[in-house]
Length: 300
Image 1 (spheres, rainbow, N blue to C red):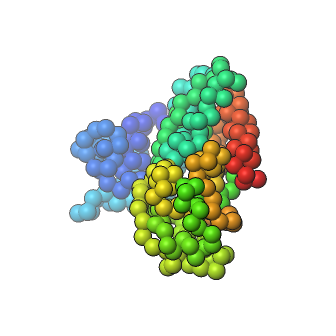
Image 2 (cartoon, rainbow, N blue to C red):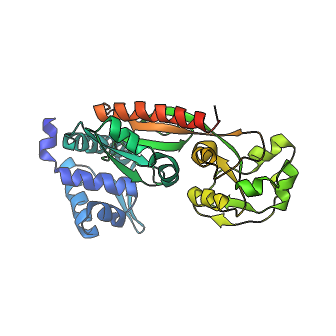
Image 3 (cartoon, rainbow, N blue to C red):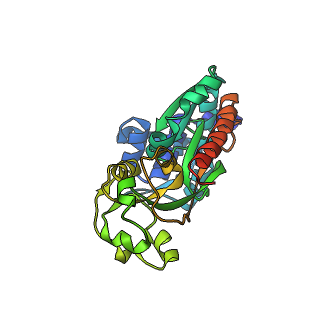
């Protein structure tokens, strides 16, 4: 690696950022410097390398074919450096950060964390509630709980549970719903961010969503469940998120049949990161709690 001694690392970072992001301005924002400073670093490093990597065009810097080859190696190298810095900064085995979607955190996880703390008082858990897809290879996040098909690149994904959906509503409203046709006479609660339609449940029952009427729309699944509890209509709910309200009698499932969405909950960790003691214990606890809650909700 002696050939690195003659090249400024900041210049290589500038080249990588410009090549990956496609502009001096975007690279400057990421690196926290001015666009002029980035341009100077790129030019100086090209001189040190003895070969240009970008074409200077009216629309900006464009990688040459040779520059594209160099960029692939630079991006891989910078990714590994970032992972090394993150790993070096992690010194505690008795703490972990879990990234999880807000609806799962609010409707399931936070209600059970007391049990984890009681059984593992020596482990501290920080919940990062976000819809963003955090990269556990580069961030301080130890474990992600994601919804999808498990096909995210450069991570280790372990399936937790498959997700099925079914109609839920308040117990009072459930008394008026005896068959699928009755859904047409009641408001339908909709999640604006939902990636599947009512047809998942309706088609196996001989109908399609054109039969459904209007109803309130919310930007969050947690709000949709609360609206169903409040008697505002019928919601097509994920069974893992509705199980507690069903067990407590706050929600009812007026019609039989629970159908898969093709999505699942997944445990996601960094591909090259060794799971800490805290992560291993949290994962074991999480799986056990899911089994208990699904059984109590009559799902398994």
